[in-house]
Image (cartoon, rainbow, N blue to C red; front, side):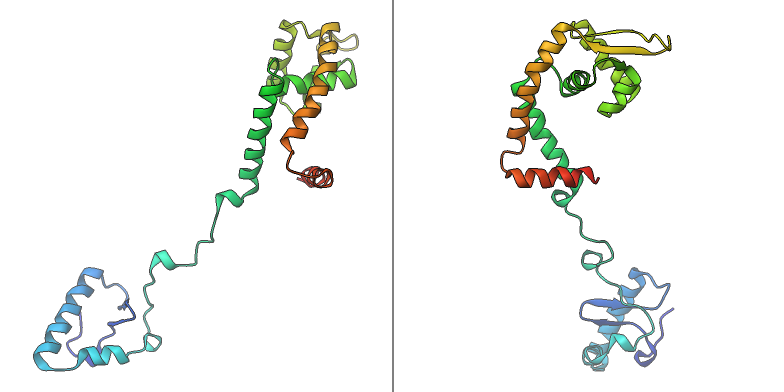
Length: 207
């Protein structure tokens, strides 16, 4: 497998990089290297000096690079990614929300706040306005209805649709909740100036 004469060999050690012919395993290469070293000591061939003068660029075979220093994979830092930062910001918001408005969840408040603005609307339309799928919207509506904060009835134009609205108790609750919600938003972005908050909201609208 390996040539007997050093002059015809394509295997060298240089700068800790091992260059060897295609198809040769590391085991075979290591055995051949040991053989070269023994031959050099026995015959005084000065193999080490010849290896030191060898230039890998003159070889036809590629240099095996250390995968740890390879630049093939781009650097990735989790803490610099938008998704990670948004999750941390959301966690902070949820902590503030739970402390200041413990009686309802953020999704329940979103439904009530939108009904406060829109009045009576269909359940499907409500879900689209608050960015929730049909199953999630139904679950939120059912829980708020059990609390007596909203009511539902079949649509007069389409019996397959449910019309959702706040009860009197629900409207009173929503009126107080939006005041608290403003404080929640202020605490969430407490480290930003008003101009920075407006800029942040504009940027998020573009996503």
